[in-house]
Image 1 (cartoon, rainbow, N blue to C red):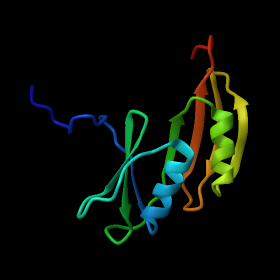
Image 2 (cartoon, rainbow, N blue to C red; image 1 turned 135 degrees about the vertical axis):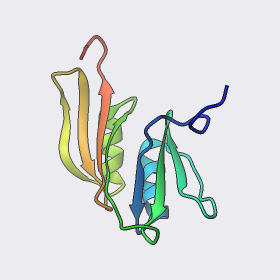
Image 3 (cartoon, rainbow, N blue to C red; image 1 turned 60 degrees about the vertical axis):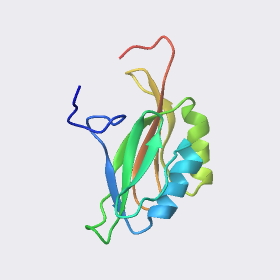
Image 4 (cartoon, rainbow, N blue to C red; image 1 turned 180 degrees about the horizontal axis):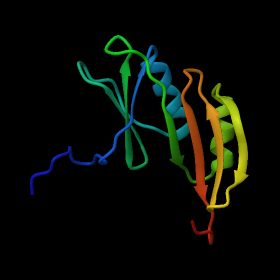
Length: 124
């Protein structure tokens, strides 16, 4: 069956333009276990879990920041990894009224990452 989007992609795909694609990709690898490699003439496709985040040089367009909500297995552990990788804390891990344990960090490129784990037995 033909599809209007590439196989394995979600309907909405974030794209970040940055002056340091390799550095941001390294941060994503270290904190979120992201995978991906540069491809000539194309945005870098970084996979985190079942999602893709495209990274592009700001030579193509003006740099743009993102706010991304990322579900991980352990929000507290991932928060600590982000801080150890140079991110600054915006919000320490906390339990939200909608059932997520969530923390927020800002990476050295200015992007905001909300790191969350759905708590067992909690419903939105």
